Amino acid sequence: KAGVTQTPRYLIKTRGQQVTLSCSPISGHRSVSWYQQTPGQGLQFLFEYFSETQRNKGNFPGRFSGRQFSNSRSEMNVSTLELGDSALYLCASSWDPNQVFSDGYTFGSGTRLTVV
Amino acid sequence: ILNVEQSPQSLHVQEGDSTNFTCSFPSSNFYALHWYRWETAKSPEALFVMTLNGDEKKKGRISATLNTKEGYSYLYIKGSQPEDSATYLCALSRSSNSGYALNFGKGTSLLVTP
Figure 1 (tube, rainbow over the protein chains, first blue to last red):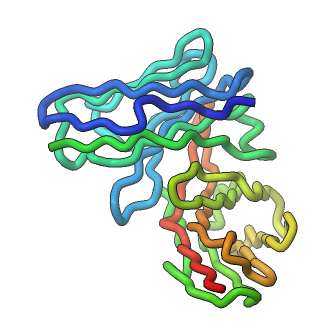
Figure 2: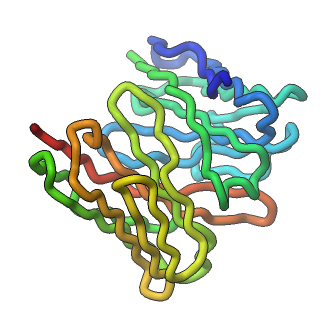
């Protein structure tokens, strides 16, 4: 079966621009979470969506936002990009949040964002 | 913010060696402890999710134990193979009113050479 699909794989943007990243979860998965990895840091939680509702948000500025559509696909948006936003952004999905306690998340391959 | 610490940061072993890593976490308000394997240029892959104190899980040559009272988990690899080379991440589940998030450690990078 198809895995978690993230597009684009690579992206180069200029400071001050905005960017939208897309995540298509495994068919049937309704919970989607986003994580950021910067050099030297562990994966940092951005947000979690379930049935089009943001249920949890990490400690990131308001420039980071997201949404989930009725087909469970999710997008995250970063406005007014800063150099420090250069990172690998990973999306993860599960059937529902409780599955996290049995099977864990299925991750996508990520979008590598470079801000210049 | 929950501090999840992993040690060692990196490890280099010879094929056939057995090895283990440690994940330490705050023992209060524990929900679940996850282990993921992340190979270069691939996606993180779930290995184990453990919820109960004393849990032990095994998948092939890899096993994990959990001690929620003292706040640590061990991951063991028996007879390491070059294909085991990857970064091993542990993460603590935490819950807000209705949502879930994972607090990841920075990982242990394992290199297995023939």
